[in-house]
Amino acid sequence: MRNRISTNGKWASRLAGLVLAVTLAGCGPAAVDGGGNAAGDGPSGEVLVFAAASLTNAFEELRGAFVAENPGVAVVFNFAGSQTLASQINEGAPADVFASANQAQMSVVEEAGNLSGNPEVFTANRLAIVVEPGNPLGIAGLSDLAAPGLLVVLPAEEVPAGRYAREALDAAGVTVTPVSLDRDVRAAMSKVELGEADASIVYVSDVVAAGDRVTGIEIPAEHNVPAAYPIARLAGARSPEAAEAFVAFVLSEDGQAILADHGFTAP
Image 1 (tube, rainbow, N blue to C red):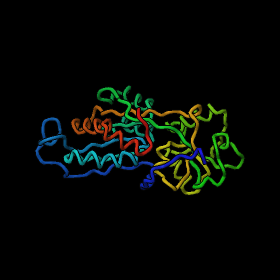
Image 2: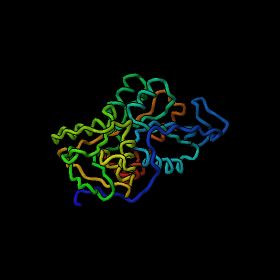
Image 3: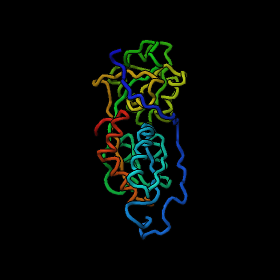
Image 4: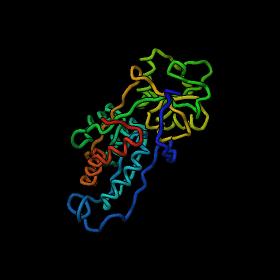
């Protein structure tokens, strides 16, 4: 079909819901400077990154490239819906970097005084319809999601992807009654992958991550809703230098190339 989303063939483990960060003990030198960083050349320490669920595959690959350049730094992730992450940060969860799927949740953290410096938009995403492999039901666009008997799942409205999905449906003049509302975009995607739902609206990057486990259907520009992703170091970062290095790598040419490989677009 002309409107299928192409993928790069990469496969990765499905990560539905929150990925709890695992503390990597004993990974840095014993000597520590006054800023909380291990002494020596380059940044060191552990960086705990709170990142939107849609970034899972891209950031997992990006971590490998970053650590190769910064062997003194250990990077661990907490992936979830941006609204969940913002709430955790503002409730005092230890975190060094926040990468959100929208500016609204970054603003929630900023207004609470928990950012260090100004956030920067580092990448963008677009929406796509996701269906079973081969699209056996012949879904061609947003209007088809209103067909009687079609099992459609959507991310919950408080999730950035859920808000964007409803904006796209409104722009197309389509009313959909989802059979479930999921905690983040990866959970909604998983139901289509497992055959528990016929369709959902997710990010193009999620379609790329799923490979041939799903088929993606393009949403035209006049109905699509671009998503801008900001990133920032947090005020309570335990290893500020290492956190800044991670943010800089995400913004770098190498970091941007990895994001592009996973279906993201330039900010």
